[in-house]
Picture 1 (cartoon, rainbow over the protein chains, first blue to last red):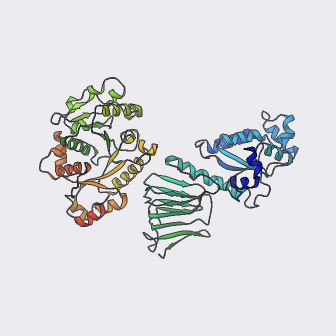
Picture 2: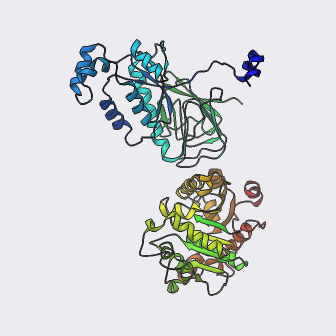
Picture 3: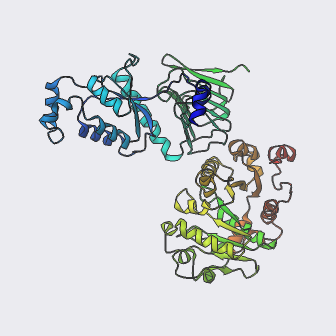
Length: 284
Length: 271
């Protein structure tokens, strides 16, 4: 073995692995306090009824909004004396990272990276196996991000009632879920972080949900929710649009307001134009 | 090899028990050793319709609770020596049904070499209905030609596809058959009832038969006789057709006059 390696190292290496660029969509947990007891309480309050909401989702721990400076840390310590002794206070300013990770894993989140950590904390994070995500896209900070998590919670909660299927997260896996069986009243499918393609009918009372686009190559009579995590570019396509509810990135419409005759029961797409759902017949 | 067939619908009053009684009787008439089990614990009806009400001493729950042997609870039909009835308890509720208990009863019946076990499901989508369908190989989904019944059947079809043992273990799916009961072609023509095409368009499940609306069903159940015994009636003939189709025979659909047979054949003929 050793000799073989020594013989043609470069050839062997080329065969054994390839480095490719890949991106991963992940949740970010924007931490605003170092008080883990309070965090546990908040998580419990929010997810208590549905502790399985997260399914080992990749998570970015965002520390950019943590209170800075020892003064604040002391305040924190005062607020939760049981958790933080004065001795800890200097460290506590940057929180108990191992305990935080443990807490998050308890809630089935999979922390994989950290951002906004100072040098000491970053060293600790790296020792714990987290990657540094220094220049997080300066995109939406607190409000949109909080919003995002909120949307996911609602969706998943419902999904667990009946049926969840997920696309395995592989670096090269196509981010599409394909369903071949009819979806009937009371059934739900959620394509997390993926597009959803349904090859059979989606009946009244069934729900199809995707973070990306939804394609239904059969009558779509149930509820269709595309862009569930806020992707405003998501669209819904159906070969016969009869949906009782359509929603894209939270903008929805029910059949209380009947679908226009030019798309009802016809091949059509639905997309978002600003705050408005646009429905167009497909020219096939 | 024993085949377990659940007769289910979601909605109540559509003809599940009537169908279970006639279907099981029909299978036994054709020489197959058949047991029909009433899963409607607390509201037993099957023994009434089968005319064995006065012979019920022990029931399904007694067997599940291990209070007696299965043999003691099985009621042998007086006319057909291949037909057995397992009644439901009137004094218990559906929580008395456990998955292990039901599995044990079904396994014992298999050991007794029954050809068919017909499970008469209660209405609804709760424990009783779930237990009745859990071990099924095939399902007769009973539907009336009206919107709420069709919707409920859709729900049940979904559950057959996700909550049964076969679905959970990822095996071959439960084979589904749609049975439309109380069909009245004249009222369909008058627009008061959904047509076969309408129902097919919504459910897209292969049709095994159409039982016409008829007073003889009421007469039969009042007499404690399965409707299939009502010689010369449309209902009896329609149920006999259902049994033949279930056993693999080709039979043209009857008693659906308002619908042209050729259109019908195109919709339901294959598959």
